[in-house]
Image (cartoon, rainbow, N blue to C red):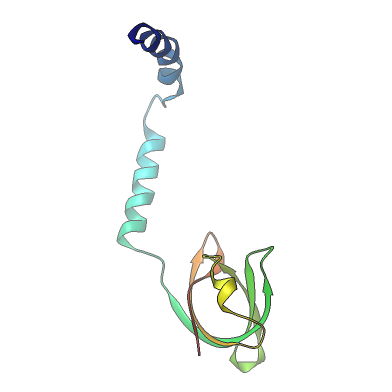
Amino acid sequence: MRTTLALCLAALWPGATLATPADGGEQRETAVALQAAAVDPPASETLRGVVDSVDERNDTLLIRLPAGRTEPFKVQDGLIFNAVRFGDPVEISVQTISGFPTIVGLTKQ
């Protein structure tokens, strides 16, 4: 058992050293991005509206907002689809995640 483990490690070890970046610049960039996200989380906005359509295939809800505008929102948690139907008045918490307005919280009114 130990011999097999030692042979596997010996075979995989050189590949692991080749896969690591030489200068560590990429690791520093990642660490800075993670640190910035931890210090400054995305701002959350609360909106009220009515569910205009539910599109589970694309993970989106179309919400009819006040002032007559209708906007699509990505859904972070797929369980939201079980809670809402067309015509439900809702209050949603929205954050921009990966460039898309995303519902991170929902309350039926």
